[in-house]
Amino acid sequence: MTTNENDIAKPPTDGGTPNDGRATDDTDIVAAKTELRHEAFRRRREVDDEARARAGADLADQADRSGLFDGVRTVAAYVSMGTEVPTTPLLRRLIGRGIRVLVPRLGSGRELGWSELTDVDDLRETGDHRPQEPDGAVQDADAIRRADVVVTAAVLADRGGVRLGRGGGWYDQALTHRRPGTPVVAVVWPWELRDAPLPHEPHDQRVDGVLTPAEYWTVR
View 1 (cartoon, rainbow, N blue to C red):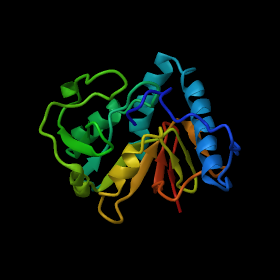
View 2: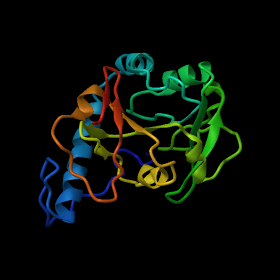
View 3: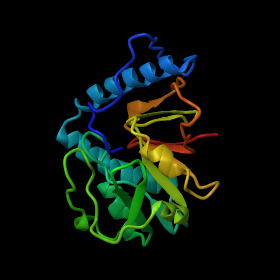
View 4: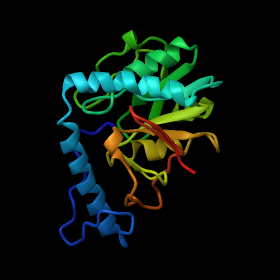
């Protein structure tokens, strides 16, 4: 989540690059993931500012229509950056509904802390290639246990619940702290929700749903 779009693992020179979930060894899987990330980022850079802003509003509307947050008290979400689907309208909508919103606070390692976001206008820049953060108190990694729904960034997702992140391992680590059974929803662009299975490894955390500006998909 926090790496630059170009700051991802380079594909090994001695492995294959299959484009589906049937990669058979670690070298193949890493290479396949890297290739898919590069392709996804190239496509994202083609989206202009107007379309990106419209997608953020559509994402919030789609979340409302889905009923995903009905009856929810606390959501662990994230602040979008770069070419991601903008989440600021969604965060504003959740806060306006009286839902408590937690967003990541990043340290130097892979462990995420959390802070409560009470107003999107409180978000501040934290440095290059890092998302904005609020100034509030930092809570430890276990704060995610209070969340009724977790909304996570993704580069790609498939309809079977496999999520491809940026490769830093931030969210795979963070999700291990959530309460068992807490639904996890990945946010991607509409074309990034794939019918074909994505390559994945045993440590990859699956998601329960995928939210795009065009639809909400529940993994069954």
